[in-house]
Image (cartoon, rainbow, N blue to C red; front, side):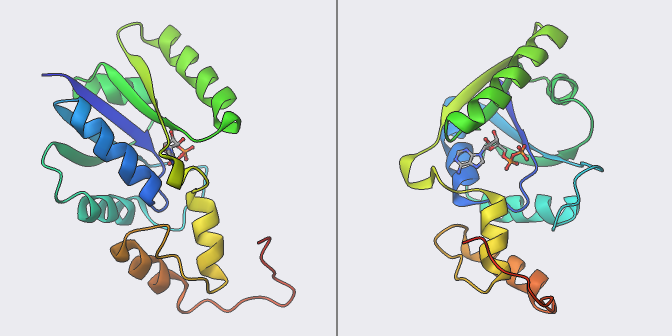
Amino acid sequence: MVRAIYPGSFDPATFGHLDIIRRASALFDEVVVGVLNNSVKSPLFSVEERVNILENITADIPNVKITSFGGLSVNFARSCGAKVIIRGLRAITDFEYELQMAQTNRVLATDVDTMFLTTSLQYAYLSSTTVKEAAYFGADISKFVPEYVVRCVEKKYAGRVKQEGENSTF
Ligand code: ADP
């Protein structure tokens, strides 16, 4: 059985993430999506909410599991019995950071390899950050995230009052 992990923040998961998960699930016997419990970043969704969102939108993919983790991805990979870390590449701007991380992880753990899946063209521009900003300013985000995620994001922003002078960069 060849198992891979797909670690990330997923705050929240987008069609871009879902596309990578589906494609990875066709390549590996099992894909464990690891939601990073990152105490430095302050995410919009709690780690439990991000896990719930991913469970919901991947419910139809039988060989995908969702779990949270903290610390190093290579340690998470080992604890899952996985030899592969999946990452997505959108553009050249992702490449430098991803390459550095993959090389560092390779030094830390020679038994774990990183595999990159390049984004499907229709999702190349998508990021959780831009989805959140668009939603915050009232845009329809249904082209960016599954319907369940649209509802979760709308609920989060429902009670928020915008400050004077707060403007979108879009
Ligand atoms: P980070 O771990 O940097 O916070 P994310 O949680 O947003 O990043 O994403 C996890 C992984 O998914 C990263 O490898 C990222 O490059 C990839 N990814 C994010 N959005 C897309 C997309 N639209 N298409 C393909 N890959 C993506």
